Image (cartoon, rainbow, N blue to C red):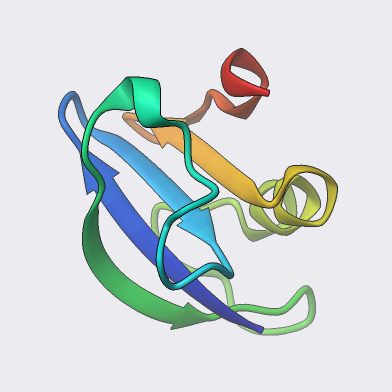
Amino acid sequence: MLIHSFFTEGRVFAFTTDRSAANLPTQLGAWTAFKDLEMSRTGPQIPGVNKDECLDDIEAHGFHLTKAHVRITDQFI
């Protein structure tokens, strides 16, 4: 699955399948595109990303958020 990553102030990163980032929380400020990642449950681990948490959140909420590599998705759903 192609995942688009974005960042905003305070070391907050977002992961989503929405290239436009339209589904990301606006209260965190403007999102800046970072890089695209191929991610699957059976594929290689991605440094700095817990791919199982990421994919679970994307399936359930449409996005995954981290701050300093700690999951914060639940704070914004």
